[in-house]
Image (cartoon, rainbow, N blue to C red; front, side, top):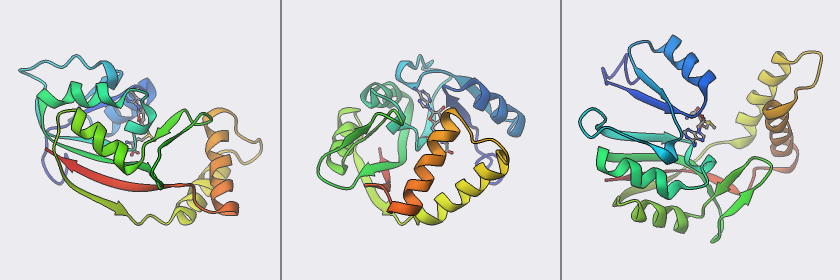
Length: 177
Ligand SMILES: C[S@@+](CC[C@H](N)C(=O)[O-])C[C@H]1O[C@@H](n2cnc3c(N)ncnc32)[C@H](O)[C@@H]1O
C-alpha cells in the first residue's frame, strides 16, 4: 500500500530471512534488509526516513530501548502499533518470548529513545474474531497433522482466546516525533 498507493520509498527491516524473501517477491520496488533491529547500523546519508513504522514487532525484542535509540537520528516520526498490558504493570510471556509493557512503560521507552509522544490511542480490535480467522487458516494449512513450532503456539493462543476470552493486553498505537 505504501508503495502502490502512496508512492513511498520503503525500506523494510526484519530479522527473518524467509519473511525478507517473501517481501522482496511481493514488493520488488522496496529495499529490504535482514537485520536485528536492536543492532541497526544505519548509514546517516542513505538511511534516513520521514517515518519509522513498527507494527507488532517491538514487543518481540528484549531491548526496545536499543531499537528506538538506534532509529532516533535517522527518522523524523515514529509510529508504533503493538500489544500493551492492560494494567499498571507490564509482563513477559515466556511461551511467546514477548514482553508486554504497560502504557506507562511504553511511554517511558519512547521518551528514553529520544522521541516526544504526540498521540496515543487504543485500537478496538475484536480478538475473538481475529483468532477465529487465524485458527481457520491454520486448520486449512494443516488439514491432517497438528502443527508444531510457532504454528502450534499460535493455535494454542487462538484456542485460549476463543474459549477463555481475550488476553490481558490491548492493541495501541503511538505516534512520536
Ligand atoms: C508478529 S510479526 C509482525 C509482522 C508485521 N509487522 C505485521 O504486522 O504483520 C513480528 C515481526 O517482528 C520481527 N522481529 C522480531 N524480532 C526482531 C528483531 N530483533 N529485529 C528485527 N525484526 C524483528 C519479525 O521478523 C516479524 O516480522
